Image 1 (cartoon, rainbow over the protein chains, first blue to last red):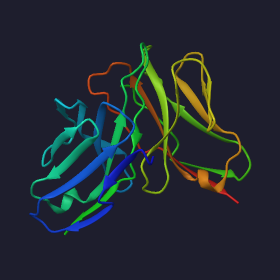
Image 2 (image 1 turned 135 degrees about the vertical axis):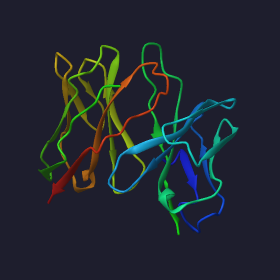
Image 3 (image 1 turned 45 degrees about the vertical axis):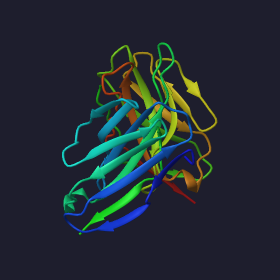
Image 4 (image 1 turned 90 degrees about the vertical axis):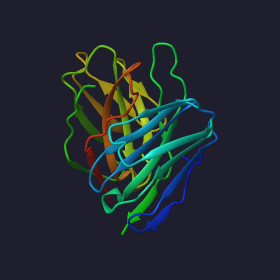
Length: 116
Length: 112
């Protein structure tokens, strides 16, 4: 979805380096998410944020940190990258769910990260 | 969140309807059925969701059985561009993490 952009789209780095992945959205959504996908597997949630002052750990947050700089921006950092963090990383956004309903998450195009 | 079961792969002829099944026998009354697809390492794309009534949009139809223990996603006229991994996900409204739990999905191969 062009409303959710991720930079960079591809990155190769070395073990021990600090890496930041950025996500921006123009959908006006309050909720943003970072997921990771390993080859042949489904997505796993790393962190999520329901608004600028709300940050929550997902199921695999170890080794990662996030920053919600503004409603439209959510960054994921790897403080000291290691090879098993080589994966596809996806950002997603969602609006507040309607009464009695659920919110729908919309995904960015992804960042392919390789840690050597 | 309830677990879903999908066949690992399916084939469909171009122009024909693709019917993708999903079992969710432990679904609770407040859990929605969501469908996403992922085309070769691109970001997952939302397709459709429903609670208990059948739903239709410009992309697909969702048929949910009366007991809600299974559902079928229907792509009415499959094209080569519909080749993708299709994920069936159940989500509770107001769940604490609001996360989507992706399984391994069904790889739909549309054949010319």
